[in-house]
Image 1: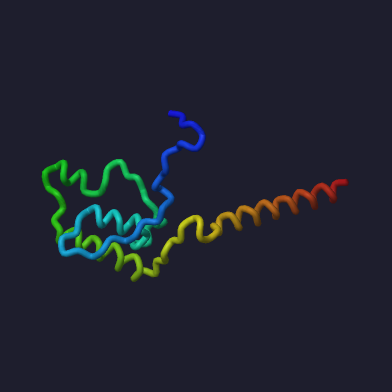
Image 2: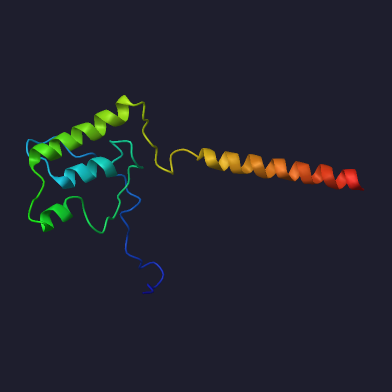
Length: 122
């Protein structure tokens, strides 16, 4: 589908997601929001449009996740990540990727090797 210039609908995939509040009756949507917000350290803290939200399979099978299990999952996702020395992953717009520096360095090294080889053969 093609949109006229300036009429493209906005996308939510680049907006930062706030971590959900604690709850006495947590849901799988809150667990997904913990992950999407970057609170668990698994991914960059922006919206992830999943086709099948967490818990959908369980609900389809007639056994929705119990709030106690979801609460435990929310706690363990946060504690295990940080206890093992995990670090928060910044969004791609906040800090440059170290892979880019590696790529530029390798490209420069290959260029130097080629230049030396050309000069040595002439």
